[in-house]
Length: 90
Image (cartoon, rainbow, N blue to C red; front, side, top):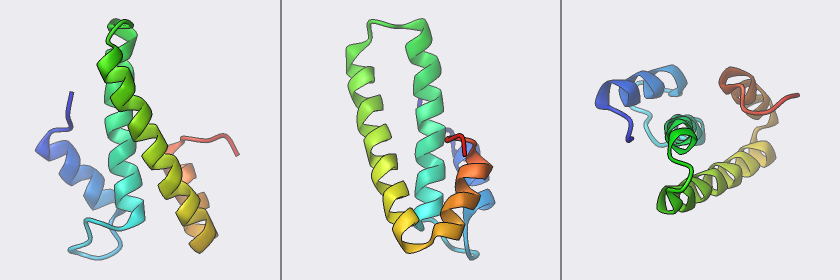
């Protein structure tokens, strides 16, 4: 269920600001979105996996907080990220 090393490297490469950037808000949100997508597909085939549902809820909450921070600090990057990830209809 976790992201593989290759998937993580690909996501980081697509969203990083600089060469060694792995912790910016954009990268964190993109990585969380990848994990959320994986867990969502798992939950579709295992609807009674309540432990995973709890973890999924925590990840969605963390991503929501990071998106709120990004919206306050850099609205243009926020809109670009939403469009790139396709996570909200604007």
